[in-house]
Amino acid sequence: MLSGISKLDLKRINRMQVLRTVWEAGPISRVDLSAMLQITRASITQITNAMIAEGILVEIGEAPYQQKEQDNKLPKGRRKILLDINANYKFILGAVISEQEITVGLCTMHMEILDKLSMPCTDHTSRKEIQQFIISAAERMMSNACLKREDVLGLGVGVMPIMIGRMRVFYKDGQLDFSELTKALSVPQMPPVFCGNAVWLLSLANADLQRSGVPSTNQVYIHLGGHIHISVLRPEKNETDYLTYSYMTERCIIRPGGRQQDGYPAGSVRAQLSVQAMQARIAEVYSKERTPFLYSATDGYIEHVTLEQMYQAVSAGDSRCEAVVREIMQDWSVLLHNLVCCFQSQRVVLHHFGLSERGFSQFRSYIKEYAGDDIAERIVLSTVEDKTDFLAGCSLILMKNFYMNGGAGAPRR
View 1 (tube, rainbow, N blue to C red):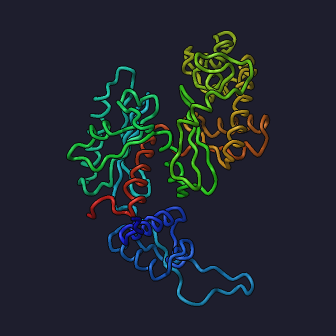
View 2 (cartoon, rainbow, N blue to C red):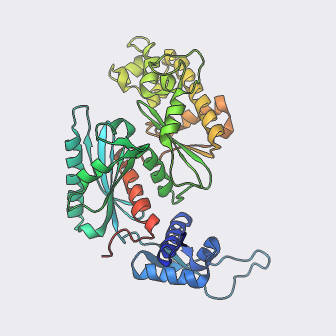
View 3 (tube, helix red, strand yellow):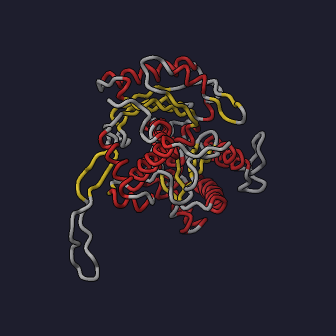
């Protein structure tokens, strides 16, 4: 026999909707919350007052008056009181495990960074060394900030796909099973631990840092490395099927009859645009005599070459680089155009492309030339880069142990 939603479940759902809306809309009044969520003002008042008493929400002052256009007069009556999430209600620990570096950090509920540590990662760094660094770094940060276990909402850990095997994360019933890693990090002195795929979490972190939560339009996130990983955030979903998109995208052909790579079609995204593929393309002209600027900038190591340095080499007069760079950017233009069309994306975020503001401007100029203004204008750089990757883990905690349970994830201080 089917049963309806219990009062407890309804309360949690309402609180979850309120918290998510406050975060996405920014400081907002009870009246506007009621209108947006179609919940009565009396219920909104009851919900928000309870969360203020718990320290989850705070009143931050009155909203400014909005003049009426028709008579240019200020409205009468009491101004709306704005609510926001209390940045210091709890604190959040995050970590990301990648093939090059382990980053760990501490932040507020508003994703404001308070502390961070990192450790280089090589092929010889063991799983236990990685786990111990995360635990010891988290303990150190809590100690430095005089925080107890109950003051911290949780520890979120994102694992890059290339590190999944090393961290003993396996598939179970078609899903990645992080239980062994979660258990290893769940020591008595640690807050609740949640683990997830770092590609997905990096896209969530970018959305959270813009205080836009789940986007109003589809957004594509591209992580550049040895593989090209694709994550898509949709307005109607809070999860992504990144594995399917990455696998399919890397096998898409963007230059028919192009370069070969074992296990991938000739001219595929992986064969043309992974970091190693782009370095292999520039290696055909790379030398002290033919590309003096690029050779000097990278100390003669082709594996140090980046997109940014390729652009600099072209500007500095390394003429042999120009044709290669243009061909690479033609391929990027084809890929970006296809992603925008396939996912109807209004925004494409570039992760770990290593581009400065000037380099990003050059990247967009090439895209504008080959794919048009419409595609170029949708491209932005990730707000989470390098030493702040751990914010991906922080986003996981906010979602799993705060928003999804109506703010009841950790005991009140």
